[in-house]
Length: 294
Image 1 (tube, rainbow, N blue to C red):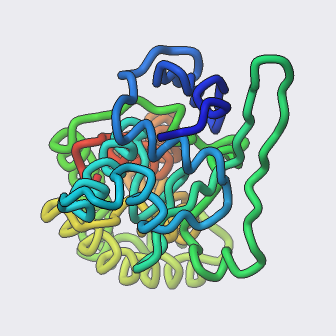
Image 2: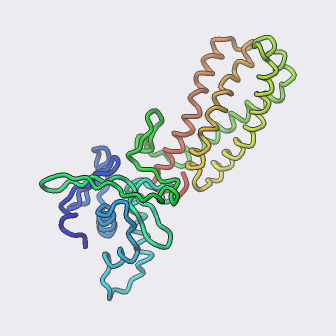
Image 3: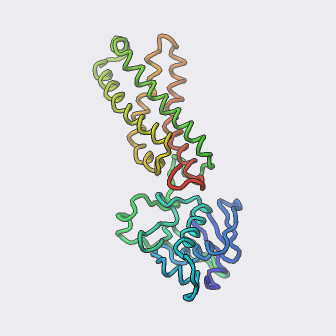
């Protein structure tokens, strides 16, 4: 069982706060479902050893006496999965509980431990090789200045995320195909509007040819529910952002039909779309019912 010091402590990590004595969990001051039983015991033990590998054998001895006959591997996995659900965490992209294959688990976020009389900080003691072991793990305290953090966003149903994300990919595919289909009209239009039309024409052609396979991949990933899609999109985001920013100017290819004002308005809206894709996947990533999916 957890020692009495842990039970009398209050733990803070990321946006969460846990009362060891009761299992009461709060996120950003808002009450969450209480953590109880074996999941609470596991969490308290991990919080008492932030940054250290806690072996499965150590947890087995914590949860079950030596003479207890139980399928502890299955029960331990169940307890850890319940913890990840409670913390909106992911095994593939952990912010709190990292799985160490064939060994155990490690709590990777910074932990503040408040005792009865004083407070102290138990910072994560991440070893130099930890970054090489877990390139995807990021402390929940490390937040983006401008971009949305997963903890800032509400959870969204998986189906809603799938539909909206897929529609965005279809929209970009339409841009690419229509522009390529109208190439013989695009080049004269660019010649009338810009100083170096050939360079811009070549850029439009190359980015459309690059964008088509990228969008087809993202569309199929959304439709079929690829595991780890949010993480893959976050890695693609630095490359997708300039591509989408360039194609936000696509309405100006129709400026003679829609006018400059409407072209500006649509361009301004399209500049937000790459960020909306990112937020959509992070909202789906927060759904505790998915495992490695969105």
